[in-house]
Image 1 (spheres, protein in one colour):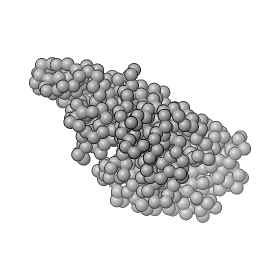
Image 2 (cartoon, rainbow, N blue to C red):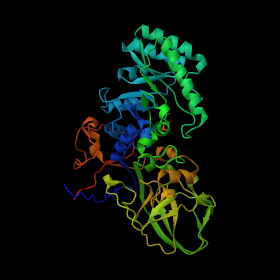
Image 3 (cartoon, protein in one colour):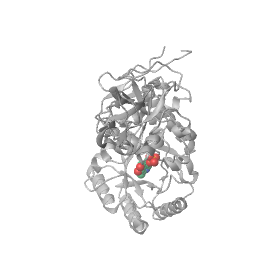
Image 4 (cartoon, protein in one colour):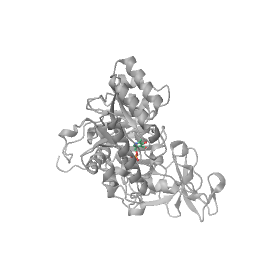
Length: 463
Ligand SMILES: Cc1ncc(COP(=O)(O)O)c(C=O)c1O
């Protein structure tokens, strides 16, 4: 195949919107992060349904990019990864947010590493080890200054002594000491050094207490990209795996060698002419300044479109790319093309549960059924891109891009492109993918996506 020209993906026949998830982008982002990690191992954080992108396909794409660890907050997420066939030979899995009653026995049986962030958890994990006959692989979490989950320094010596005693009994193996940062998105913030010092103290105390700390980890996306001192043995990026910038004031996705993996599109449900002075949507927060054309987008806050991204008197309004090709916000795996004459309009009036309204302007030529792009594979409107990205929506809503993608509603179908990466062996993969994509549904079993939303497996057709 010398000149591969991807043709556009078919839009779902039975739903007027879709989130296209580009698994090549996930793989490539992890490769880029591994480069930033400079020798540290990569744990791809795939909690919260992989930030809305779909747990299992995202995890597999991250492994294809060279991640050797997967990180999740909840035990159920870790168990879902194992149930999907991602065994300990393929990836170590760490889960870190537990309350009393957590299913530690099932986690140990599934060979999942567990975080211990409180004294009660150490005892509960030891009980599970006794019950299952399996040694618990534990990562002791120090609260080095975030002030969230983790053992405070005052309680650390007791926790270390207890862990060492349980380790001597063969019930636990402390494989790591870890922590999380408060100001990682502000490179140079003085708390970063203070947390690093507290973390180093905790590691030294663990070692002095008889533990061997093989894995130290504290860096999530932002520190992986901007703070070499904090990379230690393992980095835990989440947002950057999905191609969004964890520190937009520092750099765009492209600046960090990343590209957004999700493109959110919808078909215009209705296009209609209205006179000037026409109120739009609940509370008439927007009034048409002249005779104009309105377009109805069938996505609303039930789909994760933030109500804070309402427009008019209600605010600046979330940006939507209209009038250009449906392929403009997609990446190469989905047949993406450059912008071709489209424009960005802002949400007019209140975001409703199922829909938003656009003022397409007096000269609009759009028709019902046309595809519009809310956000896609782009560096963002402030950076000469024609198509918005999730960060543009975050700014319109006064939030962070994490929330934009993670809250995408379950009823929005995910269409996966680049699915051929799921079966790649990172050790055998060079930087360039020249192979023709496998047919959708081909290859080894991918395991069930945990997400309840409709899942489609698509490949752009190569001609
Ligand atoms: C403990 C922990 N580590 C890593 C991450 C990944 O963070 P990020 O998405 O900023 O890379 C998170 C996410 O919030 C987290 O809670």
